Amino acid sequence: MVRQMSWKSWVIVGVAVAVMCASGGLLMASNMGFKINKALFSPFSTLNSPKNVNWISLPYNHPYPNAKAFCNAIGSVSAAQSLTQLDPATGTFATNFTCNGAGPGFTIDPLKAVRYVSSLAAIPNAIFVGASNESSQLTFLAPFATTTSPKNANWFSVPYHCTWAKANDVCVTVGNLTNAVSVIRLDPVSGSFTTHTCGSGPGGAFNFSLVIGEAIQVRKSTAGNLGPFFPPHF
Image (cartoon, rainbow, N blue to C red; front, side, top):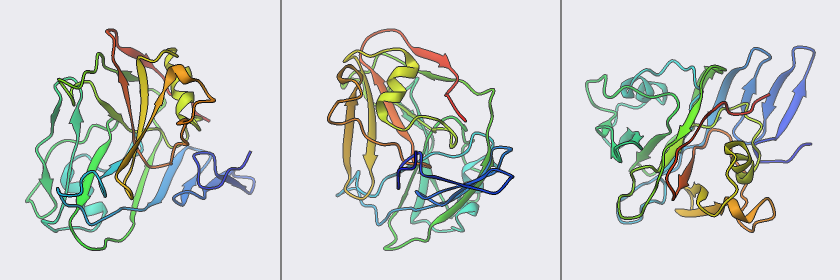
């Protein structure tokens, strides 16, 4: 099934089974190596946040061990561009690293989303590369509560070759189809959130499509972590 601009937008090329994803220009080879031309959105300002906040998924094996390496990958030495990661266990962000910093900055956790912003009027797309890591497991921490947010707000990197197409597919994998679990996407262009409640099922009005290279968030309002589990993949 081919669905343009979604997680499953694949065109199979040749005997080597290389795959090009229409949403983001992903090149995937049969050895599960990845190269993506990732659109980044700007300008960011605290006045219109979370508009132009980019929550990015990186491949689980990637050549960006720290924040400075990430900045180098996008060709930035600008104080106007910065990144961080959220630790859901504590609800705290890594030290915000500006790309003009001497480095290396914080160590990037490959399973967690990277939050990237730029106050520049325009920025070029970024080229990210990497590979799969089939031994990686995800755990979503709970409980989440607005009074302690962002603690237990699980912003995570979705594997590029994951078979999840819709938000409810995440619900099925974690085995919790109740209203206590939500899957959330931030649209960086509009700054609006879409929240799919697992209890609403695949027919729910907000069962959004996943976008390759874009991270999502999972919240569970009741006690008991979700996982660990292996994300399903090709």
